Length: 332
Length: 200
Image 1: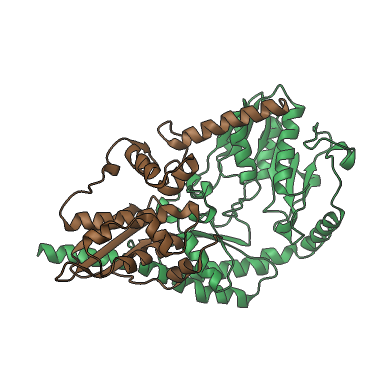
Image 2: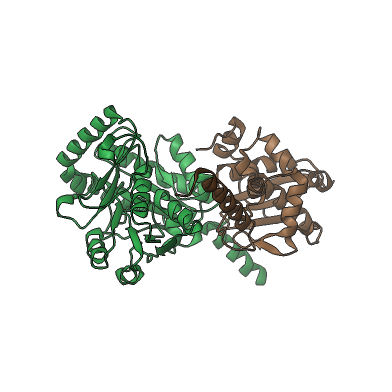
């Protein structure tokens, strides 16, 4: 596969084509655009799509899932870990429900692979998507795991490559790169759970201490060890990123202005994060290549950036307090 | 990240005239936290009626902050009548251009200025853009406002309308929302394309 998106598309179309009489799919409101927008497309083109909601911590209601699966549900596509918040869904448990109801489970595990242990030989997952660059392989390579016995129609039709499951010449150097990256990820897996997690927790705790009116989005513990999604009230995400960039700090944002669309993060909105906090959200992702010095550098530079933008913002607390004082004195 | 001009970057990294004026002669406030950007503009006039000082506070992205900073520099020394002739294109040009998707930032600057001038004159905003039927519920955009932006900037596509006044950039799901029609168009297009390539 060329990437996670191709793998997600291949999984969902591959199952839909192999089961043409089944016209229903179940997915969630917090999927990566590769699945989320495909769901929207399918809904516009004659399929029935059920999008499961999440609670304020980003978790699913499994009873809702159980009730959603129908006889004509061709596929259930639910991500392993969220790409914006790092929230981990109980995919194995979901797999048992899907099996019981007689459907097929696909999971987009792009964010999870390499960061938390996964054992597909003892799993209820039927199809699994992964992407190379999320585990330090080259960009532009991904994979789709298909369990033996699952009937699958190729998404890219052509030659006999990949045992007739994907036409087209294989990108051999990238495939070798992905293989090596998986080998290394397995070797360093415990480090993700310990050292990387400690770095993330330190960054998060210190930033929360130094920048008031800040919240962490997503479940505190059912979360990838390397991700934190922070919302800073009264400021806007793109402005934060521009100032972080000046300091050489890379982050991403769920703010509308960053992406070019006017719609802020669909993930945070599905979680019911207030608009005031959605616009000022950023995601920091760490890896085993980060050091304590990197984290200290972010802790040193991020809070002053937030203070600086709040000084410009008409909604910052200081402004509000002043206005309040003005009103009171005017009344007196 | 956006390809901002050097001037936009300069006004974002070193914004001019940030803050508030004590006892201002005119205040203009537009936008909201929910919309994702907001601007509070304050003006102080001298005895001859020229703008002696202008200050702003902005909640918004890089180009929103830069547009507000540019606006305060542009209006200083002008009478309210002179300032009132400034357009959003003038703000964008002062900044050596804005990315098209960010044109609504300069529109917000012009609107704050209009609101401030109206506030000074003790009047409601003369342009009836806020009156009329709200057709974009996410951003509270009226049909009059859309018509105004289309005429003012000779807009020809729905995406341009979104770029200039945000209408249709949010949920796209309400039939009262221009984005609904964009999705409608997309649906028709998709149908046509699927038709061309044969059904899946």
